[in-house]
Amino acid sequence: MAGFFSKLFGGKKEASGVESLVEQTLSGLIEKGGFELDYDLKFTNDKDGASLTIEFSGPDEELMKDKKGMLLDSFQLIIKRVMQHNFPDDKTAVFVDAGGFRQETEQALIEKAEELKQVALEQGRSVYYRALPPKERKIVHQYLAEDPRIKSRSLGDGLFKKIKIYPVKGQDSKTESAAQE
Image (cartoon, rainbow, N blue to C red; front, side, top):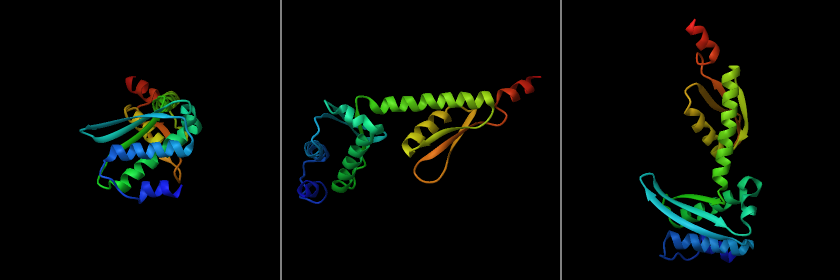
């Protein structure tokens, strides 16, 4: 196993490029982990910068999505760190997914945020979203920022924080009906 990680983080560097390094790393991780997975690499380069999307498929696809996608997050982190170590100037963003898991998760977060937003607007008071990790909080905050009637902010210490969702003062239905009279 030490030989595998020395290749990734400190072994001989070949001038074969990022794609070759990512393929070697993925093949090694899949082999050493005993996974039955195939993967598809997609490099894109646009105005926002370069990105690499890795889509897993195969018999162990459900395993990758289990435990809220923790294995997907782990693969994503390892690939990103290997790239940073071997190509420190390369700022390619890395995204790892299996069977549309990321999109399903994002949609579920948005649906719950919409539900809580409606409660906050109808009742004219604050409601709270359960504690979330940073990347999930970002999705919720960005979605809620699209509606000028509502505000959100993170509360708590540490990595996982709750989201407070509250109506903007003067924007609730009671104030609007009073202003019309």
